[in-house]
Image: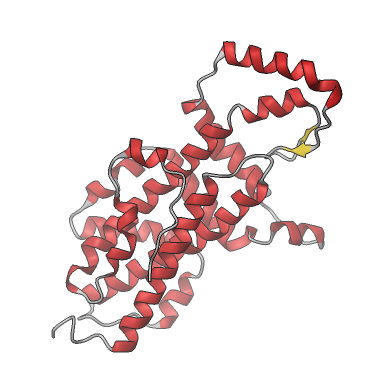
Length: 271
């Protein structure tokens, strides 16, 4: 059976629509996480929405193409995807197994060598399954067994990022704190940091701000590494199965990590 001819026009159309949605959601999520700080909480929360949606959809596309590969180009039954639900962790583990099955374990090995990636997958899974409406749930009396999403991200992922990548500059800190002292009596500050703690003076505001750039940059980068693995995997899977949807995710297959960390926007034009 010719794989190209065996796909209906409707199947082609729907796969392309789904891939466009997944790619744009991921791109928006990476862009938003690159902008967030303790003042603009909404950027982070919206990033978690877009990333959990985009990565879940990309994983389901991978499962569909894997099923086509092993079942004479047939699509899986809807019940298969419904049973998986929003379990990103389960689908991610399946993607690892698929990479092994097709003989390309190198595309995920860097992820298994660093525990931060499993922590990110666990976080996104928890967010997708139970934390998307955390604020409203708590406000209306629903008992949620997990931490508020941004607080959880900060205490797990950001904690590692700051320990690894933040370089304290004593001279800069000295100048910053001196400036804070000079204007403390004439500036009113009222914010909450990622942990929900009050930031009520200019000194604390400056101290919180010192780690913002490294949190933004490496939150985006580590998530990108996960997406890069998945984008490479769909590239290996779709070679003989039309439509060749891996082109939707080509921007996520970049290999220059230094360049990736410099980018601040991943909004892409996908038709």
